[in-house]
Length: 157
Image (cartoon, rainbow, N blue to C red; front, side, top):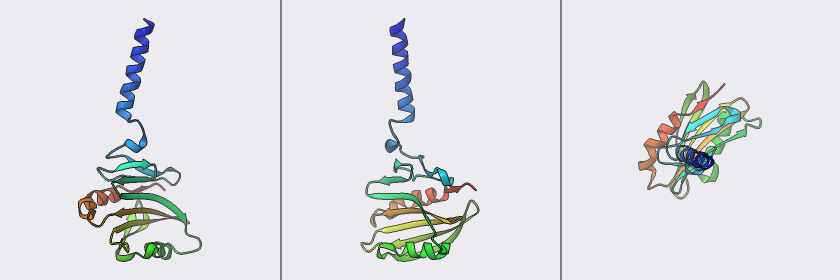
């Protein structure tokens, strides 16, 4: 009887591991990146792997979710300054509203020709940044999944 309970417990544990995964780094597909203390969340792109609550990747392509203080700058000035980091060339910028928050989406080329796609979200005295770096040759194949991911962004009040 005792042996049967142990086997049942092991099978239950194994089933839970198979359903839930063995760790966050191994989660594919609809996993969520988040900054829970700010109430910011986003689905990772299909086919990408989540490395941590605020980072995911697919091959050498990466995405990072982070926040910084505005430090007495306007939201727009801070976003503009961040878009020009690493000597990136801004290709396009567009204004968005995400969950009622002012946002800016910027697409840049890095000096080595890769795509840098960022979404800046204004939340109080903080700027939330979603930053994708995608290899130039892989951008067309990833663009749709990345755009769907950006559309999934949510910011709680």
